[in-house]
Image (tube, rainbow, N blue to C red; front, side, top):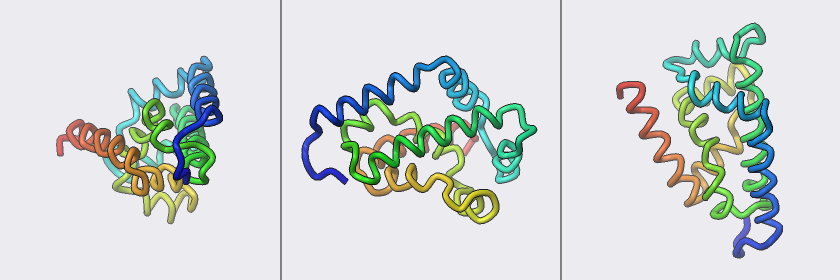
Length: 143
């Protein structure tokens, strides 16, 4: 991960990530997952991972987008502090599946949420943003 201050390359990547989030299909997918997907069990996560689930396409698009974005941070291509100032939304999806992440990896996809989890646990900015979303999701679930 970057130990240095962000530079213009980091800024360009953050702007590009923002542009990609504004693409119409991506925006629709984000709205669907952010607004309609609130798993209460592993069965809910397993259901959305099936191709015939109405939210499957949106789930795959949003999940892979954030894994790509957070991979840039994990591998030192993008400064975590700068990125998390405007790219924390993926922490919302991670918070939604957090209780079942190991089961997801064991039964559905061994690589699922690895980059998002790294950012959420190994960077100060990620821990902060993830904590906010985790508290919000726990409240929505009634916990």
